Length: 312
Image (tube, rainbow, N blue to C red; front, side, top):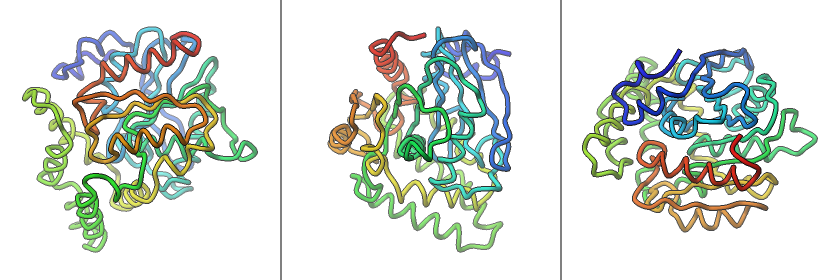
């Protein structure tokens, strides 16, 4: 199976169409985790990708399209989002998602070099997972870490902290309303479009329209109100800076100069909290590096991997 027919309208369709992809699933913590396995299954290097809040595996496919040659890339839908069902043995908070990620990676039985990559909320999940004490970390530790648009400071401290406060009110209202009305509010297309307009920085009209289409199609693909509310609370209550000092693996931070959620000054401070981290700054983009600058992100990742022993 290839992706060329499914993503014919995407800006990266031609590149993605050359990357083999296999769809699979694993039972984890009472739920079923669906994942997409791209590239060479026998590659020496495997990247496990963790997407952001309210997204699914589609969001990172522009980066996958640029990285596919010579690598294996495994991209799950977080439990309760996309095609993955909710966990029944854990809440959908940072401890729950951390345990899920450890068990998911362990269940994959990966060989060779393993790299964990997290985008946005996924950066918090990856960081929290790796900050576990060695005695408590039951899964396979990665050889390296990549965090794209890392959440490097508390959400309310960002340059658009007022928008975060509005988001908190929005999710509070969705929780306070009766189930049916709250669920409808969470999936309201007008609110999704306002969010998309605020986050997109590109002035390229076709690209901007495509980004809005991605958010329209996938930003509301969550299983139920409980899951999305738990995950939202986790996303604003934690950030990578809490965990950075306890992550010994070589880490690449791919940050946006114009990110409205974590300003570049905070990303520079975040770099200093890691024992071993490199920061790559990408101009002309905000919190949507994966959509607007996937080529630049992939180049930074490729260079990082090459410096640490080759691509594959």
